[in-house]
Length: 337
Image (cartoon, rainbow, N blue to C red):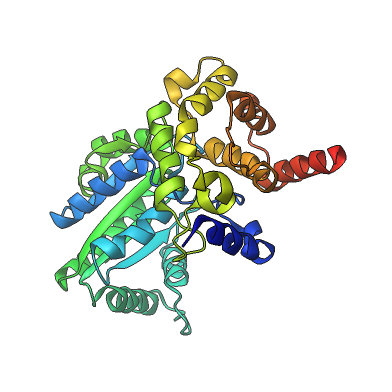
């Protein structure tokens, strides 16, 4: 399609689709280096029938985005596999019945849940078997795994064993915050069988460390991620179709973006990198101006990124609600109009 036709076609969809663009909603699933590394490790373990992989990360590092990416990638790597996510809540006394009901809910179980514990177990076992039988494989991802109790690990171990005996390959993936490290050390001493089964090795899920990491992330917007799905238009092309046709790419902004974050990080960025949430919000705030900034000679400067990053309150490390930030930005534009 000719560039002018692309421009007209894209702009024609704006009234219905622009507001839901993943970058403008700050919920884009991007294959950052950390996501690529995690997916490679998990799928390699799965192919070799290793039963578990565990990751710890700082808050806001992008664990949720990684889990969403794994949900999309797993069926590509392992056709017809099952994939479920369980997020244990922080509680003093765990209950097997509650765990079973949570898992049944995640699966989308529509039947009447049995009142007895034995009945619930049978329902969950049958539901998981049905979910996994086509591909003979299932991924069980546990988010906020630092909230797990040892008893829950025991119940999960029994469930995994039940499936394994029936020739279903099970890969358990744990994602947790830094407290998962202490849990790992404690289990290694007190319950080595659980430690070996679920987290024999604890991997760090890292933030974006430098401009090259950010460039990989931004290149996904330029080349890989499409909006709307199947349209052939990349995230960047959809927001800046005129500039895109003239060679504008977000990946070219990686150095300026990283230096803008560094300027407001107080030196912390050199130790901790920058979390995906801040990248997502900066992209959202810059993207809000796309309709008016889309010109043949568009260049996003370091000053543009600094203004966006300032609006995220990144310097205070206390993330505001995305919607509030967006409203402030829209209000500023209206006031200046």
